Length: 502
Ligand SMILES: Cc1cc2nc3c(=O)[nH]c(=O)nc-3n(C[C@H](O)[C@H](O)[C@H](O)COP(=O)(O)OP(=O)(O)OC[C@H]3O[C@@H](n4cnc5c(N)ncnc54)[C@H](O)[C@@H]3O)c2cc1C
Image 1: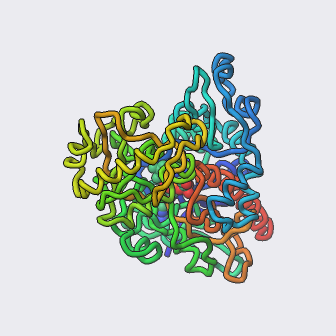
Image 2 (image 1 turned 90 degrees about the vertical axis):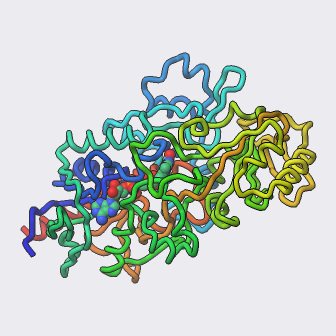
Image 3 (image 1 turned 90 degrees about the horizontal axis):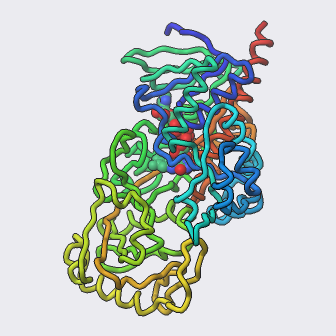
């Protein structure tokens, strides 16, 4: 097959991880090509679907100002940014992954987090504090909680537009509508990428390749094979293009599989959402306000501790639990006392919502739910709430239930002020946890734990970072940290290969 142009570094995948890799390789002087499967209009992968949140180490206002230089004095005065130390971050990663996380990768992610966000800001990404999402207004002052203070302006879409703009300005080539299908490996390592474009096959030469083309969440067959029965029916929250290609290409040339292949990030998601995300769709299928209500299944029973922790430490594992319920759906139920705390997603088009002035009326309207058991569940829940503990959404308030078979640990408010509201949810898969084994320099390792010369990986397709659960906004952060490293290392590798060939 005819070999087309040769690049120092080819990056497969134009999401956050791939674009950080491309920018960093370019910064190190490499000639860089990004291969992207989507059209320019739908570019950005899952990264474009995100809220743009970055979980980074910070020590308060000065660190936030360093990445949000346009913060006003008035904004600073009305905000308590708190702090999020490296130890807090490592504790969170360890705790939510049940201490399975690869300690070296965790350390590398955490230690480089703050510096990498500053680097991105230097590349042209604009950030802002996540007021309203990660902070509630109490007596006129916003207090941040849960470790995530900043997001890219314009959310995920804003993030990828800043990154693409920077890449284009710095001379990174980008080809759209191209599906990379195989890695060309020669005696000294990676030599190029085989691809399909416009129905034709081609090979592009490269001295180094960065794989950054996502996990296998959009691949029904792989989902069912690795995550288990029922996962073929999950809705995909983001792009339809993350089919596990990068993982497969690397395994085909001897790379080592790593991490929790049966695990994924999956959330409660609009029950009747389309099969895949559409970046241009209006409305939102997110249903993240469950800590302020209760969640019941078809039997009318609660099945999770809705208030076990802040939303961003539980949401990624509750989608799987909904999938496992009879019929793979559930209803989130709220009353008027917490209505104002529901995220705006609940008010947007496309929500399967019912209302009732009495619990009986509500139960009648909650499709496929056992009405008598549901009413009994609510009555038992209401009676078990410790009403003497004040409700406070900013802290784990300890306002719990006692004596139930499954208690709610925080933010337990009796469901008693009508009209009552219920929202139907299913399971939405975000990304998969299993992937490739890399070292902290992002070399892809083979089954002997040796680096495959010229092959690097970053983003969702890296295994070993998440098990069972995931702390919100670590995905973009990890993709950026390892993407930046991968770009730099790949450029270095390409330089050495060029020198050796001269
Ligand atoms: C709805 C939603 C909300 C989220 N919110 C957040 C958040 O706020 N914060 C956070 O940290 N994380 C969030 N995440 C997770 C986050 O999206 C991922 O962790 C991160 O974006 C992955 O980045 P990536 O670059 O690895 O993959 P992607 O951004 O998905 O990029 C992969 C790219 O590779 C391309 N591709 C795939 N196969 C090929 C191929 N064979 N050839 C060429 N190109 C290919 C795809 O088209 C895609 O553009 C969210 C995810 C979703 C779906």
